[in-house]
Length: 116
Image (cartoon, rainbow, N blue to C red):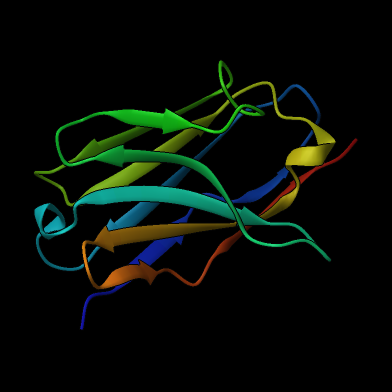
């Protein structure tokens, strides 16, 4: 059973930065893509950023230019560098690994709160 464990969340002031990490048990290359999603209170879970196994990245419009997804296949980790954070970025952030015809495996989530 694959496990994804997020870390790095916390409280940050508007304009600040955080770096989220996701540790994947086993070989990260088994996943066709790795992604970060978020869910704010009362809202649906939404895609933030994803990276394919070939390195192609995809960002949702509200984080473009501020967030950067990266992966380290040697360490079986995927990270999300978040800069210029805004209060509307407050949410639980989830790491997901996608396998074609199977779907996503999810981490437990990490809370990010942007507030002064």
